[in-house]
Length: 121
Image (cartoon, rainbow, N blue to C red; front, side, top):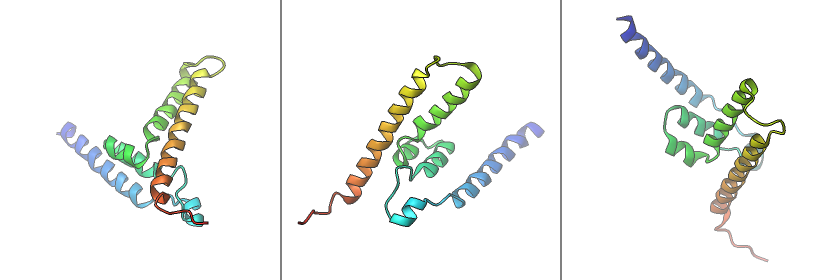
């Protein structure tokens, strides 16, 4: 009996925790001051979608979220198991790759948001 109830309790508690997280997201100070999305806008909602198992929604909200989560997991694993070389070549390569994803997605987002304005001189 206890083995049947425990997974149900875990599932319900996870739903309550996710609901609480969705209602307590941190506001973006850059967007608040300028009205323009920052390069990190969408990350929190993307991670919440990832926790819920919706990979497509997570990718559409913030394309770099999945690689960033994997990068942090690799960093933790490297700290304990020493997976990288002494010069941290793998971490540096991943850092540049994820940075390129962030900049490309931010550029596409800004192009889509502000590309319809005509420059007048």
